[in-house]
Structures are given as structure tokens and as C-alpha cells.
Image (spheres, rainbow, N blue to C red):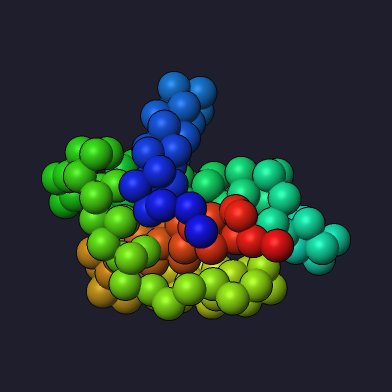
Length: 152
């Protein structure tokens, strides 16, 4: 198992890299599209029995980073900087039960992304609910990295 603080540091760096390379997310649909693309890339690796290999861990880190990026780019009332968001993400990830296998982690990510989509599709709960759901996606991805990076 990889330490939470180490995973969070890498996620924070990935958020900064993404901000330097790509424009801000312009819509909720774009945010959803980016998240689902990263989850789909992880799914390919999980289906190929490579869910614990470095490329899969990298994809899970990107999922986590894009969850935070959604909050940064799309939630107008968010007042936390990236470092503070990473700390909040740490609390959320630390509260989750361990990921038992790559398929378990992927299934949890699909469920979390579906919850996120429900909030942005229906505009239910406003930006706050969508932000919490995006952080939930990121938290599952962080837990995936923590538990699968050094798994047998």
C-alpha cells in the first residue's frame, strides 16, 4: 500500500501539469467527458489484467487530478486553492474502505462518475453537490492508487 500523502502529492502535481497544458474546462459536459475518458483508459488496462501496472496507476492519478480540476474550473463558489483541495481530497480518500482488486476499484469509479453525472445532468444540488461528487470520484481514484500500486 502506498502512503496517502505520497499519492496526494502526485495528484497535486498532475493538476498543476494539466493546468499548464490545457485550458480550463468550459462546461459541465466537458468535465464529465474528461473524467469518463480517463476512467475508460483505466478500464482498458483493468480488462487486460494490467490494473496494478504503472500505466493503470498513472490513469488513476489522472482521474483524481481531473476530479479536482473540475472543481477548480467549474465551481464558482469554490474558494479553496489546489493545496487545500488536495487536503480535502485526502480526508475523503482516507475515509473510504480499501480497494480490493482492480475490478473493485474500477466498479467504484464507474459508480462515482455516475453519481457525478446525475448531479450535473439534473443540476441537482447546484455546484456544491457536483463539486462534492467530483471530489468523490477523485477520492476513489486516490484509494485505487493507494491499494493497487504495490498489489501482487
